[in-house]
Amino acid sequence: MSLLDAVAVVVLPALRSVFDDDEVSSAELAYSDDGGGPLTLALTARGETFHDLVVQEDVPHTTAEEWRERLRSNLVDFVAESRFGWGENRDAR
Image (cartoon, rainbow, N blue to C red; front, side, top):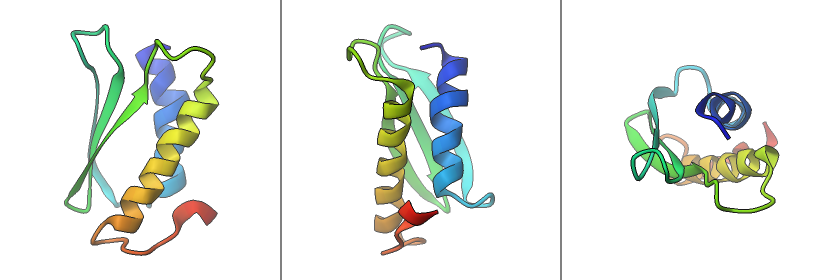
């Protein structure tokens, strides 16, 4: 999956489903291992940092929708464990 596809199909939909417009202050996508490794996301939301895998090319039969749901679920957990969203369940958004 290309970087642009990952942003459009995985990352942005996952972020929009979990965060309000003013919560995320920075986000960085990067390929590890000089472009040959997995694509990772680092973001800051209300002063707290989240790091996660976005896409890993060597995982067979994993669709973009499955990667998006994995990221969305991890973001929901991050918010529920954060100081700003402690205990919130953002699954229902």
